[in-house]
Image (cartoon, rainbow, N blue to C red; front, side, top):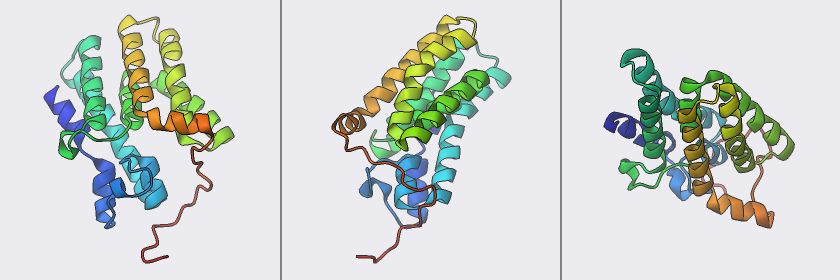
Length: 200
């Protein structure tokens, strides 16, 4: 579990930003997740951040299931530890991302069918609103319902989903306040240029 926490703690968005000479913690929302990387650097770095953050959740779950033959409860614990590492990374003084991408990676490893449905919920809400946080919160609400029905009412999976939903809402407190006040920013275009340095 220590290994999954350390893997989750790798601050991918921060490291990607540094490759472009940008500290994403000082730009945009200040978050190290893919959305802020998209806004401050561009879609290529954001895609890399997203995929690697997903991988941080997927890899320990698959290793636990296929190599170590862990029980479902222990596999879930390993996955949750990776999400906690991403959200509270030791390498950034416990100030990390919001856990959505890494949690999605865990879900892919646990229940690919549920992950597909959750992605569908996220995609529909995003297509209608163009707001990433609203899409993530909507997917989090749907997660316990979907995983309960798609995993044959597996209690351990339901417990995992409830914890992830709680964590997503916890890390989106500021976004929820902005949503309620109508001030949450939208993704206006799928093509966002690289940060233009020196532009006034």
